[in-house]
Image: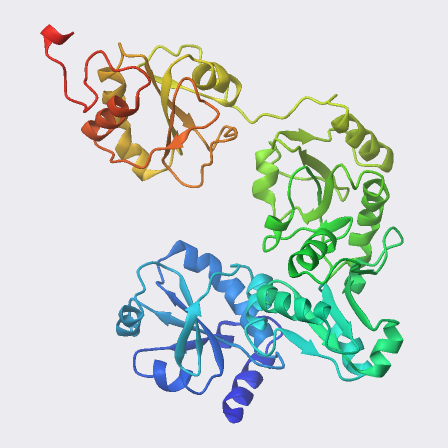
Length: 491
């Protein structure tokens, strides 16, 4: 086994950049035999033509390069389900691509449900090996643990077995995939930290600043949930580094500064701007959450604010309030401008930014067109039950649905029902509608537009009519509640 690891290590070490050879290629003939030699492996089942697989491929290779050097190595492997790995993919029930699964000593262990970016894959998989909390038996262990990763460390200091230690260890098991935990009962470590029964969150050195402490000590009860809340509250500090693999940690109301955030190539330049944001954030930490993000990694978010390209080195700043409304800091970045922007946000002096196509000159077709600027008029306040389709112009399923949707609108043209469509790629989708794929359809009863229901029924004309006939606030003129067309004598 060690010879196997050594071979893989030397292969990975031979290049400065992540390479495809860092990922172990497996086939039907060697899948079981090779995985049996590996304590922990992550396997990607893929198809060469799959777009999602192509996007994951470089991230997977970067993660493989890092994980092979871990104290407890994790091997990343891949199986081509269209060629030499067909039987293996069938055996493990692979029905979509990419599918990722974790194996231990050749046996399937669990589905991989972690991030799809290199950093997130590394963090998730490192948590799969070794204990959930690393025991620190010397000052060197303690100092090395803090320096080993550019990440937050949560360490428990326990002179003896206590309720706090029990709660800490229980939480470490629960959060091992998200947080780095360690603990120590070593006398010299306890004396160095000045703690005998405490939990301390240490911020990574590259995020050190004069506006907040480098570490925070938990002072609550020996309750797992309370310790979890403490970690969540303090994990990212005043101004967190928001990345694709942790963006879900940053909740509204949120102010994000986008610029060339790069702690590998330009940590000094990155912190130059972050420190200025920190100075403002410290004043408003109880009102808004703050973060910095790399403008290139979040170009899709910039597009949501109508920005295609960021000129210059200075950050641009966007915000979302508690109701998810968007706001743009229009003036060039400075401490004074940022401070005024936050004050104006809090005082409701700013006009929200709304991504919207122009309101149609004419909206006389049976299917009404909603855009960002007229959504309230066409949907929310139209006084009718409404079926609304959120679509994308390039979506094949949307194009297939279009003639049926048009026919539906024609069939119900005299009813108290609105059939509406909206290009969700060119307009902001308002809350509470949640659109993550196309087409997405919602049924919004006229008296409860704040609680629309996702339409999950069939896509044939008859399916739509039966659904609307059943759920309409008032019975339709032309159809009974079962969706049967009424006879002329009934009309």
